[in-house]
Length: 180
Image (cartoon, rainbow, N blue to C red; front, side, top):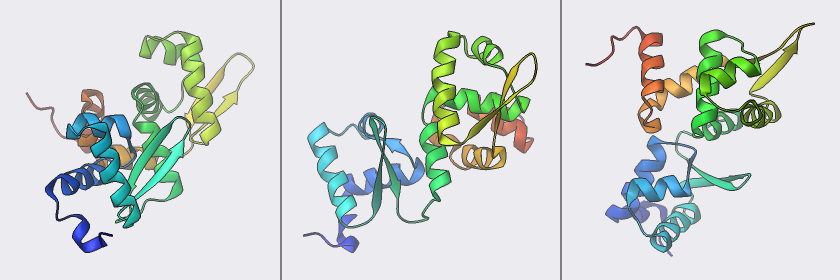
């Protein structure tokens, strides 16, 4: 059995571990895309990293997400990071950070998705506790429960999302002029 100190001596495993550290909450298929490893090879190295307690696996729905044990994240942060890895959900969260609240229709127009698809994503967010809804006599609005946490995680891990929309929002929050 490999011990924790020797587990990262292999360049392939080190590269995999570094990818998980830079993108906590990443799922298996995304790791496969980013590392170029074959499925069996990737699974083997992930199993080793898990057994020597360098990464933690978190199953949520049909996805298993991977987190480094170094710099352990809270359960709330893990949940938020996992959801931020889903493109449509990330866009919803970005819009709610910017606008503070939005209706299903506003989200549907912004995302260019069917209202039923937006409702599907909103149910995930409501169930997770990241979003709450407030009903008025005429409309139902959705808002983030902890927008500061979402902002901090988006800012900290912005490079791991490979998303120009995230970059644009973070540049606005930090007052950085966009790159040309």
